[in-house]
Amino acid sequence: MVLAPGSYVENVSISDTTLNIIGNGTRIFPPGFVPGSPFSVLLGADVSLEDAILEGGNSVGIGVGLGCSSSSLRLIDVTVRGNDYAGITVENCTLRLTDPTIRGNAQEGIQLRTGSVLTLRGSGILDSGFHGQHVTSSAVDIR
Amino acid sequence: MGNETGGLHLFGSSFVVENNSIVQNGNLTSAPGDPTGGIVVESIPGAPIMPQDIRHNTIADNLAPGAAGSAGLVCNTGAGTGAVQCDSSIRGGNERPGEDVQTSGSCAILYSNVTGITSGAGNVSVAPIFVSTATRDYHLAAVSPGIDIVDPSSAATVDIDGDSRPNGAGYDMGADKR
Image 1 (tube, each protein chain N blue to C red):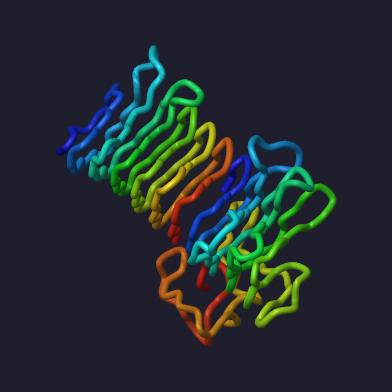
Image 2 (cartoon, rainbow over the protein chains, first blue to last red):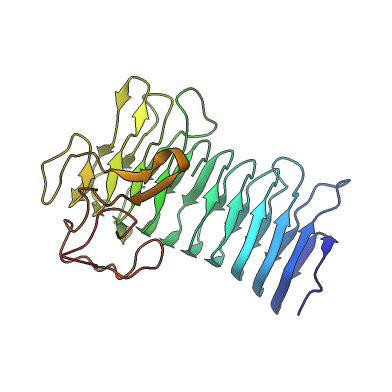
């Protein structure tokens, strides 16, 4: 899937499918009138996302920039910024990040919960409200 | 960099942390959650979860607000959980209120430049000399004593910028290859 450049007001949620998305620098942010996240991957999905900006997740405790649960997700040159909760939160998820910018999120930059695998290359995790990365019962390779 | 509670908190996990610049995180007065400063490793009881390697990192100028927090690198690992290997890294300028705390706990430190620590193979305690900490540029300066002096058996092939290691007479300390 190739997205046309621009801004999208969406709660994108992908489940139980395989999808490769080329973002062309698009901004994705949820509508402001309901709590939500710009991008979520769950229930056995296998997703790659390249060249996109995920921002504006709203509502403390819910408004993560990117959520991943029980899935596989690859991000290339993706920016996650300005979300009310963590930038990225994953659980039982295999996550590969290449050259991400994760900046100015209200809680952790990346929050790995139980059973996740993170491979991070070329990291830039800046100005988070909590830790840059908080990892629990997972496996990480950060270089 | 610039993360309010700290750089990296690893709890009950396996990890390889290599070629990272973990700098200027935390503060001396307050922080939400569990204040870390640079890196905190905590193990859970039971069999070791391997690998636990921290190598070729620059961990500098991180702050933590109190005795319960960290500052540089802290390994809070219990008996039987395996040793955290930390080599070829730089730690300096990490503080808690009223004290410098570069490392505490059970980290196995080798070939590193850690303020106040000279025991252990290859360890030195000297000013690391970066290009410009004021502008957050933690590349090694040309006169840095960390050049060419770390573990000759290092397996790292590149640095934080993707430049090839080693260069010159040997491997350099920290995330950057001069």
